[in-house]
Image (tube, rainbow, N blue to C red):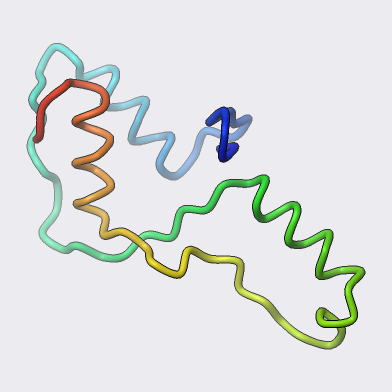
Length: 92
């Protein structure tokens, strides 16, 4: 989503989880799912758009590849916990 408004037009990835959690609201608190805590790289789309536009025109971007990622990604369990606490006011 957008870094300031959270707005998004695409509901896949993490948004699928948000929608599912909202539908399971009656069962809260929800348990953790899965056993691994893999890193997930979530970046706001406005950051990606602005950086891409800049790199497409700046000399530093010529003949180079850039990975527009979060330098300090969160683990999937941590992201799930943050979402859960925001939605239900308590941890999973």
